[in-house]
Amino acid sequence: QVQLVESGGGLVQAGGSLTLSCAASGRTFTHYAMGWFRQAPGKEREFVAVIHWSGGVTYYTDSVKGRFTVSRDNAKNTVYLQMNSLRPEDTAVYYCAAQAPGRWGSRVTAHFQSWGQGTQVTVSS
Image (cartoon, rainbow, N blue to C red; front, side, top):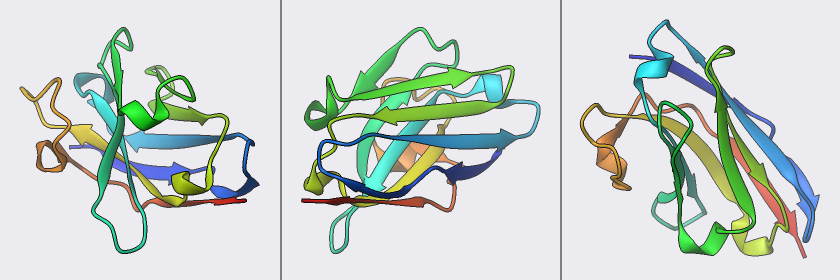
């Protein structure tokens, strides 16, 4: 498994941008598809985006399509989430996670493992 540490969260005004990073330790980072999830207060953790281990395929939840971009740099063992046109409803703790082998395409939380500690994103109106 990999160990994950997110960074880059903060407070931003609506319409602004943030880039989250997720640094992975371990030599097997390239074996995993990587996902981003978020959890707002009082709500369940929800899928945001996922990127194939190759970086060549990505999926997004509908509410962030066209605004968020997931990418990865396998040489740096890092996955990114570029967030543009942020809205107050994007406020949440954002987590990265490694997708379990054989689960490519799944958006189910239980199909991800090795979660990071999360980073807070707050969007003010």
